[in-house]
Length: 113
View 1 (cartoon, rainbow, N blue to C red):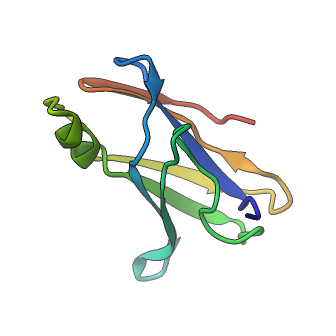
View 2: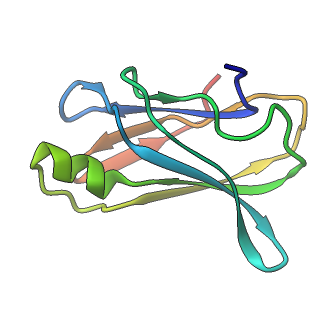
């Protein structure tokens, strides 16, 4: 599988393991709002590598994570039924890795490598 320009990795910090089976959707901002670019599901290692093409135009993008369904499968209540991360792609030749550190009542993110 070719790795897209945008990838993500979700770690369930509350459980101390990768968050497998989380639906992830990548959107691009356009004049009409948000347009679907790609969707996927995290693998056993919590990674989603195939989110879109190898190259994206510069612009604003959003990753949506269906964290509510993930925690529902685990039987764990959560305060955040979904997480949206909005970020800017400015250099079209660079890779953008957007990790999500997740627990039922908190999350954090950063630009990874």
